[in-house]
Image 1 (cartoon, rainbow, N blue to C red):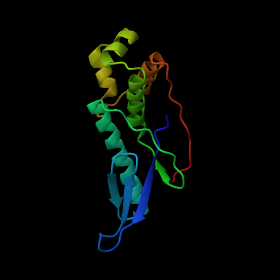
Image 2 (image 1 turned 90 degrees about the vertical axis):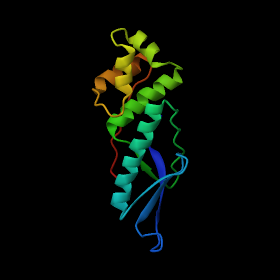
Image 3 (image 1 turned 180 degrees about the horizontal axis):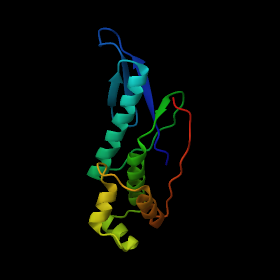
Length: 146
């Protein structure tokens, strides 16, 4: 699954405080804003990072992105994206962290919890190895910045 989510941006009226409002249709009413489009897009990425981090920490499923259509897309920071990919892999396999630790062999359940912790830096190779055990892999795309 690609972790790029469509957003809807609209200019706010002076009565609303001006600037731009960003809404995430796939995230149950999550919103952010910015004084201009550039700030609104940066805040949208930060907001998406926090939405994903919360779902990972709480062990809640991550929503599937809807088709973009004519909407702009926002992607998370790479570190959060890797941790979200690992969480998605665990969910798809119906596996708890203990099961992954057992399949990896040299990691404890606590080590796997650390791999998933959005606040801790993790070497990408560690997550790639865990994903391989789950039959998954991460791919990277290079796109023009919006």
